[in-house]
Image (cartoon, rainbow, N blue to C red; front, side, top):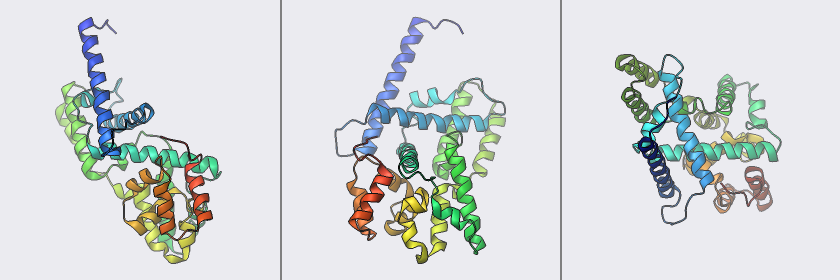
Length: 283
């Protein structure tokens, strides 16, 4: 690698600073629309890593050969093309999901899927058993890392981000136009967001009915995704929004959700501890 000229180094450093400030401002707009509070540096770093995982995952999926270095992140972040609220919302939801997954496993000493899905694998209704197997597979893929994180995006956000990655790769001449365009079309045509953990959990909970109501209300038994799906069924707020709400800094929203489901105070407190661990823990 050659020596970077001083002027180029200053330009690169300035671009990085501006991109960091822009990301901070975007996080403030999403998390604190009526507040001047600044998101922590840790949260900014985590969001940046999720956005990097999204762009690098798409880039690797598009290129025939494994790239020696990733090109799209620097170009897109410096151009402000990763500042879409939908992408930041998605990153925040995945961060909350990771946090809740870790807490449930460490506090309750159970897997993210809990006891109920394991039982449902042998359900006499083949549709329920099959959806449970799909949920298990989706969770294994999700827990394996962020390499395929982009597959969890909804179709509209993936379409937008995919073509921006294509434009970045063409700009830096990392690939030829026609093969890259074909690869992007193939990627988008094969995308199926109904195979995500949250989508499968929503379908599964619909078929389970009221006989599993009590198990679904407890994440230590139902696991995170079925528990969130039960909240979504009751409140219709969307799985990603509920993940951010449940995994957020303040416990009051979670307590209100649990109270609205009819949970007694003692049980609600147990669930909060299982989901949040140390209450004072912040993002």
